[in-house]
Amino acid sequence: MSVEDTSSDQVWLLHVDGSSTTQGSGAGIVITSPQGEDLKFAIKFDFKASNNETGYEALVIGMRMAHEAGSRHFLTYSDSQLIVKQVEGTYEANEESMI
Image 1 (spheres, rainbow, N blue to C red):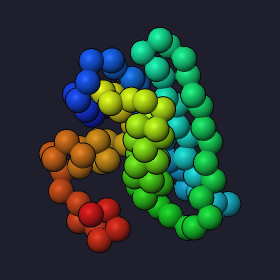
Image 2 (image 1 turned 90 degrees about the horizontal axis):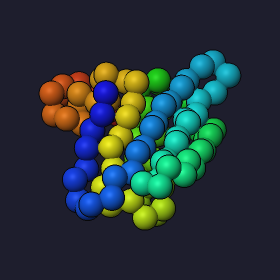
Image 3 (image 1 turned 180 degrees about the vertical axis):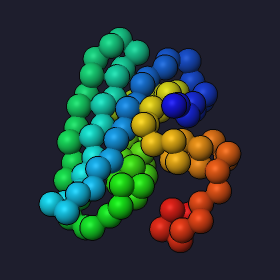
Image 4 (image 1 turned 120 degrees about the horizontal axis):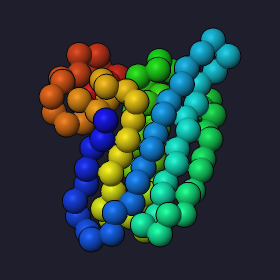
């Protein structure tokens, strides 16, 4: 599933995924430039979080990192249907932490 930001001509790709287990939580982020260069990141969070919360953290961090890398137009991919649908406005957040 994807969410599109259409603010410029060059398209970057942003892939995000969050994960939470009893051992901890974190995120994986891959930013692909228009020239095909991949920037890969693994982030370990220092706080407890649900899978949905880690997905949102991955999305926000990934968007900031893509912006810092020079992206002004990007497609964002996530395997979380909940996050994609909430960003698109199709689903409404119920939990305070998801709003």
